[in-house]
Length: 99
Image (cartoon, rainbow, N blue to C red; front, top):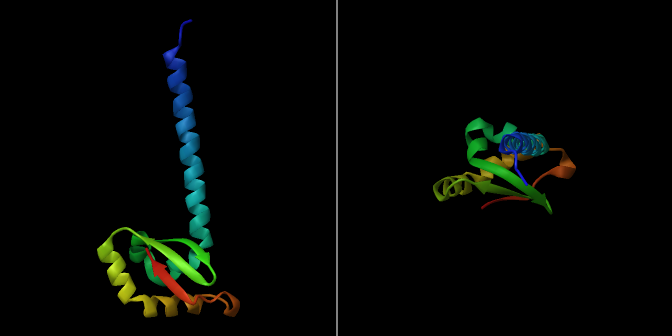
């Protein structure tokens, strides 16, 4: 049985582009879901700290490195206030956990 590697390579490229497209769509949905976060903290912090999920009025945020996590933890009261200003009364956060 002969394998046509050229055809296989074309399929792999198509599969990779489809997977990349799906990941891009997921990132866009997540960014839209946590749009209030990016409005409150700005672009610079938004690149360092990415919200992962919200549970029981607590927002869990993944941070790229420990130094940034330390600094964001120190700024937590100000960030929480900024975020809550953008949210409606029934969606306000009680806490933010940086991990």
